[in-house]
Image 1 (cartoon, rainbow, N blue to C red):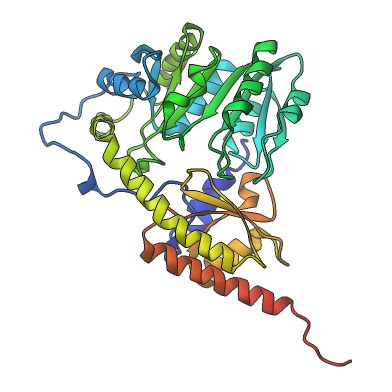
Image 2: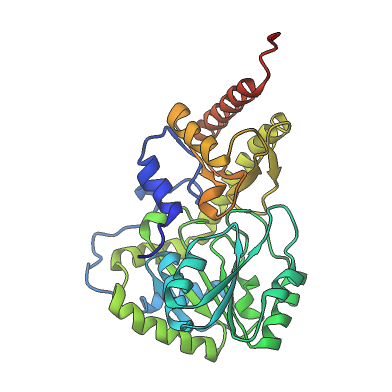
Amino acid sequence: MVDIYRIQQWLFDTAGGGYDFDLAKSHMQAALVRDVTIRDTWDLDYTADRGLETVRRAVADLYGPRVPADRVLMANGAQEALYLFYRCLLAPGDHVVTTVPGWQQSWVIPREIGAEVSLMVWTPGTPFDVDALDRLVRPGTRLISLVSPGNPSGCLIDSGTWTALIDIAERHGIWILVDEEFQVNLQESVVNRYPRAVSVAGLSKVYGLPGLRVGWAVAGSEEGGAVIEDMVNYKRYLTMCNSSLSERVALAALTDRSAHVERYRGLLSQGRQILDRFAADMADSLQLVPPVDTPFAWFNLPGPISSAEFAERLLKEHRVLIMPAEVFGAERGFRLTYARPLPVLEPGLDRIRTLIGEVAGAARPSGRVR
């Protein structure tokens, strides 16, 4: 039996809608139907297994002239694209290196396939340790799986670090998979720098359209394109195709990309000011890891209770939803999404402040003489 998916279990089973303020889900505030284009003349037929050509061309354009539309696969969210990639690239006995805290899928699915997985600790707020990753590489290493900007850390792998990572991958013939859901400028994608690279992204995070379930995988070379073709065939057995309605809405969103990015940057700018003030006020109890252009931030929680207990109390006693470190394979921290309207963000942070006061008060000695 596959491991329990702790992220989804926390969001949908444990929380189950029992909150007033959602500061957990990693996308910016979700758009409304009125924010997108839907035409009553669109048919509801099947779409192509690899996605509508017009949509794939629009996605390819995000990456620049080196990426043709035939190296793009549209998927039901980035999560399906990641799953398809693991299933099509990996075989029993392969070795994978990925990072923690991170996305559970990146180690559970490779292990289900029969691959061995090494977890490299990338502590939020610290530079990516290329030497530590290099020490994990061995004969049989097939894949390095990364997220940049990082989820849940909000940290970015910079250009110099990418150069060192690509050098390691080239020396050993290793594939690089990068979840780039939070990358606004996809022309900076690793697929434009390394032929054995695949990028996965979608419309959920930056565009605030997670309910469309539109994601994609992109390869930058013919070799990567062959993997994309394998993924297309696997998808035929899995979900066959995407929703034609969702893909047409996606095309309209990509055509009007500047408006969505402007909304994203506006929420980030407004929310970051509130977040920074909150972090300064709570510096004795929480340690903010400054995010790099992500709609969420990581807080270290060095206090007297675990982050799992803190998140559970915040949910049950104060009806605010955050993501505890434990669902990402870590401890003593939480991810908090700040790309929210002020009527959501400010009262949510106030309730976190209240709980921290309650926890600190309970931890103080009573002062009684015995």
